[in-house]
Image 1 (cartoon, rainbow, N blue to C red):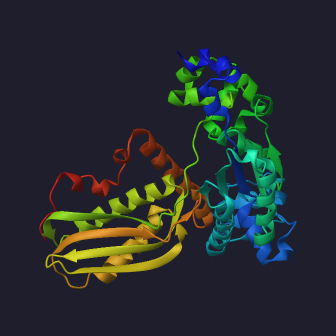
Image 2 (spheres, one colour):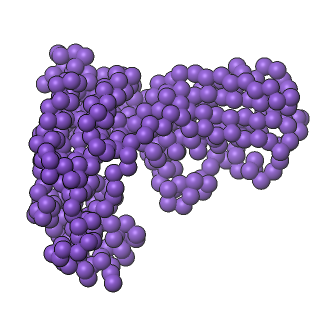
Image 3 (cartoon, rainbow, N blue to C red):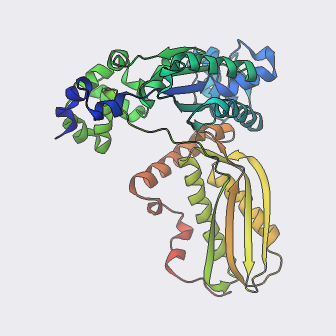
Length: 411
């Protein structure tokens, strides 16, 4: 039977399904305006001032901003030029990913030392499963102690939300910011969510919000009253998820954190080749695929490596440390430079490979220091097509014929 017809039973009975859905204790922690907070630790003169982290060129984009800047309407992904029109007195800083990674690692170590199970969702965001701890310590009290320890040892402000699932806890964190706490007691999830704007639901972007507004849906309560079949008709498969979220339903588990060190791709040719154009196009495709995987997993890369194996099986590698990025255009340039400097023997090539390492967690917006609005928009559209239709549905024109034929002989 469809979930809509059973939701009241789920919330009121004592079935095993109800226990599974609502007997957890999930803590969501989020460092407040993380980049700005780190900059304020490095320079106390920045405290209380409108700060913008982003590219300083005329086409630069805001990666993060202080709460003082947000009061003027400044927000992430906005062109810096527009942000300065809204807030001319703002201080623009380029950003220091090495420092941000250092502090993120420090906070992660503090959490890892005490948390029973935790998931690092991004460079500044964490989920912890505290289920069962109420019998011994009290989940809220334990969360307060952990928060105080993080603030004391890192000097960074951090907010948290505590509830029965990831969804409600994340919304709770947002409502407690800046530097606050929020506990949504079991059984009060709907009462907490219903008055809020649908924009507060994680995953609802500009287009979805625009469509919901056109339908007259602006609060979560109104969204919860729409039949799920209607939402599925309007939004496809995500319609059911919208309905579940509006009813505070989220069974997403905590995924134990493990640090991925690198990601790589290799290509062994069917015939050894010296056709450089063919090899470059293959490597471009590798960069595109790996960069998409980086962004999809919420990671950035700080080191790129090129590998060449010749026909005689001698293998050579060369690497280069770069600024943190997940932009294939930036990485393609570095890969091309490494290949040119590595390919000196002028012998037939049997295999080429690329590796991205020095990975850190972080949403793609961390990479906005050098990007333009046009670059970001193009990349987001390409990622959307790949996510919806498959990774091979949009590729560079130069690569189109290479996947259908053997490497050509040297001209």
